[in-house]
Image (cartoon, rainbow, N blue to C red; front, side):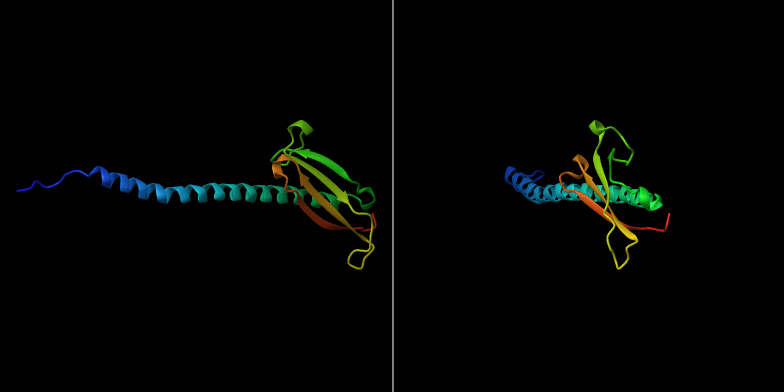
Length: 133
């Protein structure tokens, strides 16, 4: 009479490990791609919130005082020195042109450069009206 088996053979263990490895390697590839996309998305959200702040500030400045400026920011949008900056922000009002059929509108562009955007500049723009300051 044969005794019942209570253990796995070496071949069964190797096959099970092979199946597990074959499943986990593609999952690890998806995980790294997902993490990169999450980081890009986070940068997009941060830059859009900071740009919104600068564009709103440009709308509050008297029209005649709109001037190009450059700021160095940390990841939270606080102004820091150039050496400690994550974002370099260029705020550029376009020369007064006839936008949308009105000579009282100027386009203000906010461009993000630097290590925080990893060589993929983010550009945001809005129009500012001359309200006869």
